[in-house]
Length: 85
Image (tube, rainbow, N blue to C red; front, side, top):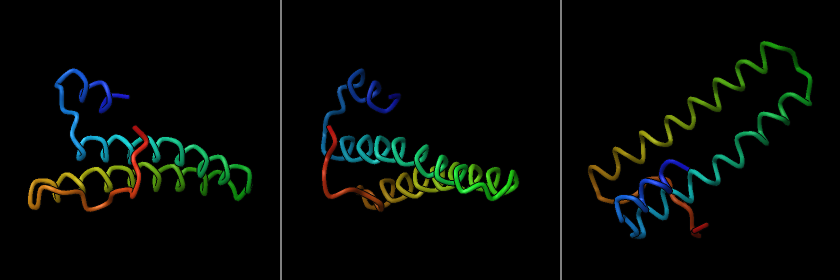
C-alpha cells in the first residue's frame, strides 16, 4: 500500500512505478500463501522460523536488487510481463 500511496501523492504514474507496485502486490499475495503452505506441512517450528526469515530476506533482496538496477540502468531487474494496476 505504501508504494501505491506514494506514487499517487508524488504523482509518479509512469510504467516503472506501475511495475514496482505490481511486483510488490504480487509478492504480498504470494508470501502469506507460501508461509501457510509451510505451516500446513508441519515440518516443525525451526522450519517455520527459517521459512519466515527466507521470505523476508527474499523480499528485501528483491527490493534492493531492483533499486540498484534502477540506479544503474533506469530499468527493473525483476519485473512482471503484466501490470496489476
